[in-house]
Length: 100
Image (cartoon, rainbow, N blue to C red; front, side):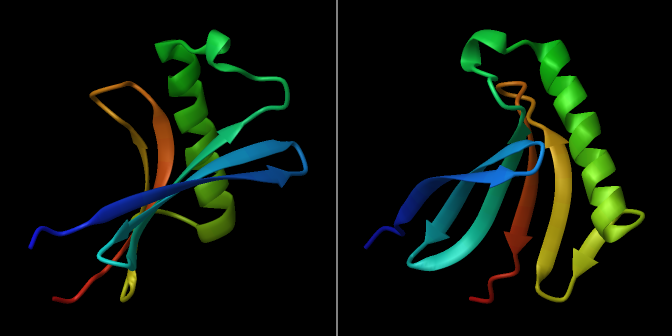
């Protein structure tokens, strides 16, 4: 039988904006969490590649503030800030190490 993926979207407020949170489950186990910071009042009408590049820089600064100098590789998984090449969206990805 095929492996099942499920995704859940959440919205988490922060002091200066919000995080869009996408949780990815694979066969019932949390595999990854994608976070994207947004400012209050922002909408998809504001989307541009340049704004996403700025968002990635902001994500990089947040991770450096919270976790120090990259890479962020741990026994339980890894964290990275990316600009996705297919859709030019920026996010912080938390990937959990899953043992088979």
